[in-house]
Length: 498
Ligand code: NAD
Image 1 (tube, helix red, strand yellow):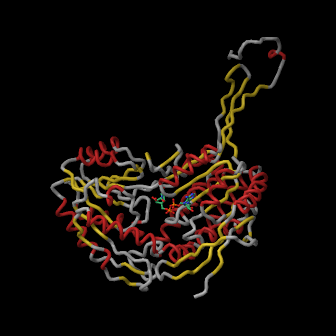
Image 2 (image 1 turned 90 degrees about the vertical axis):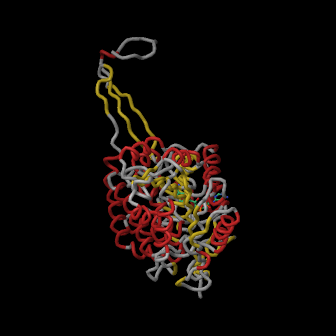
Image 3 (image 1 turned 45 degrees about the vertical axis):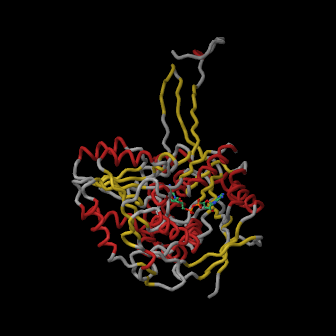
């Protein structure tokens, strides 16, 4: 099979330089190498940031009306091409086509939010704060912004940031995951078609070398990072040490608490969907199911019977679940399944021995269910990021809450119950950034903000919504008066108001 070269997109065109290093891109459903990706050196980062910096000057001075028009045009193009982009995601990430399409749709919602930028950037105005003195606030672009994204949502995660950064008048350098880079290139190319000036949105492919240079570069003013917790912490510390504003979203271990009064059929459906959708490679996947006794036996049996109907295989063939993203990642997840068995958890459904509808060399692992998992086990402690669901049995609501709140991650959580009082207590008491009540994957809409607590977010600003607009702009407050003779006279005291 032939492989294609995948390169940076700079100033509206593919990069024409020669890369010193490249990295293979795989189709996870076949195991074949389908592309060779250019990895940027520090010098290439400087080249791209220079282009972005130049472009940011004119774009930042472009009227809100014109910016909004470009956003509307981009929205139309993205909507028209969403199937094409979904196919690219499936070919390199492996998630099934319907899931890939869902990801693009959730990204589109952020574009639609950003179309309202003239309204979102309205400042405040206070007339006559002192006699004939007015005060008003404005928000201005930062300049060059960097977006560093993970493999698991190659289109959606960049779309959490880029439309808002652009709408706010910034230029952007996107550094996608090396594992599935093509969807980002395809989405970025649409900006040019929508009328965005060249150089405002650029894609820079690379690994640690590129990230490190972006974090140090004096012309990069902000960093929006999404990825695993150790790298998120590193990016936050290094980026802020270099004077940048940084929002760094990290990993997760999301708990779904099921209270004894819940509808167990609906809870079992939700657990299967949220545990195994996208092969568990979602930062909002449910990986720990907390069953409040006495329902665990019945719930586990309902989940296992649903899992028996799932078809794992090639994402283009109408299967429920696709492969894992790479061979080494699949092997790591399989290693966790072995540890779970060794550590004494009850393996109810073993994904290692399931029938697969796909090529023999694909990166397969079927859905796996463990029961009687305890908090000391590695399958509970670590973010596995694969199709492995662990059931932890607890005696009471208080024990369930303690478990969730003791976990070092705080991205998403859900409670399943018909008791409004219990749900309300949970939403108030749980130390997690995004909470679902009978909703297993509570990803906020674009006009709210996405982000976790504790080790799931470094920095204080969540993605998109008004927090996104705030992140991508700097505030300025102007105090103004139009001088007339009443303002005359000498007074060296600190100004007060009259
Ligand atoms: P990752 O941390 O390996 O990679 C993320 C980005 O960091 C990539 O662009 C990668 O090139 C870069 N990178 C990797 N190692 C680096 C290093 N040593 N120095 C500098 N940069 C480096 O994450 P991943 O495996 O691509 O994605 C999965 C992780 O992302 C999971 O932990 C998942 O929970 C998390 N995630 C979190 C959210 C959220 O909103 N909190 C959303 C999606 C994914």
